[in-house]
Image (cartoon, rainbow, N blue to C red; front, side, top):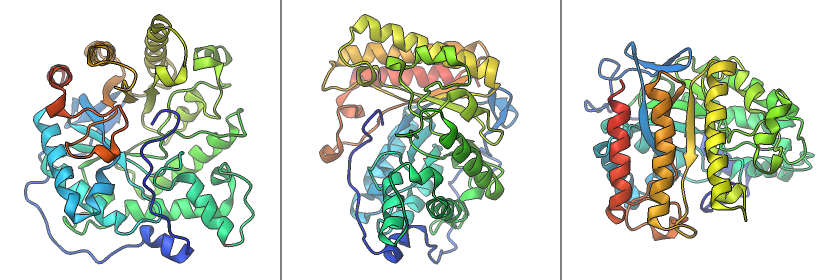
Length: 401
């Protein structure tokens, strides 16, 4: 999330052949759960112009981030946290969750993801699955580059993730292993599972050395086409924060601090295989030292400009993929006011037929996970006022369908 990624808990493996255990298939049991989302009950969310469509009706949602689901599900002793949070989310009308489909080099990672997808299907929560991290948490692009370096490959920096042919092939191997995996619990191949809402190419892609945007643009074009060559049913997004680039130069002034990070909200999302756009929002991190009024003005402009561009320039839906306020910097009332502000912007677009179909706050967490707290966590039992705001937004968004 934000600028520095989420909680660090990578399980390192030095042997390359061992590290690639993550992308290996395991023998799957033919077990089916009759309570799962079926094509008749839910089907696959699709895109029509600037709207999401489910069963020939527009699809709107209220959602959340919980990056930790696969990590906790990989250990049978902590799997109950996954079940509990998905059940709670469903009870509060949260119908889409964004989570990691990577823990590069970790043991039993995909078995954990099997459980997450199975439980999500039980509780009617659709998943946005991110396939790799820009940050070092849980491996990320740095881990891929390191694997190649350890085996004699010439790599200079993390940015070689986007350009080195061997690294790109390793990432494609991971994509194929995930998308074609047969769930060991449900027996359903991931690419055929309606419990998955969308694939995400990378959590917050950035380039350290290429502000022009060319490197990431070429990578998005190649990897989006590869995903769609395997799975043409599920939706695909990039994982962008929303920074503008050279396509519309005057838009760069909207970026916090006029910063360029190697992505281009317009050109990246114009790639034909990309189905919808995303933005993230962390004004306190992006504009440190600025006044509350300046941050509020930035939030309004950031959201409205991207919604407008999604409609008029891209012709695609847009989702607020991450937003939140840290309890380390703000009190509950300030956080609640911020969520109301974002929720209103999302609902106002959706209710007027606009392209913004939903938002996912960072992040939902269960009780008893103190080691993973980052200040942004929302725990229902500890946050009654925030929970009420979430419930209200869920009802408003579901009423639009």
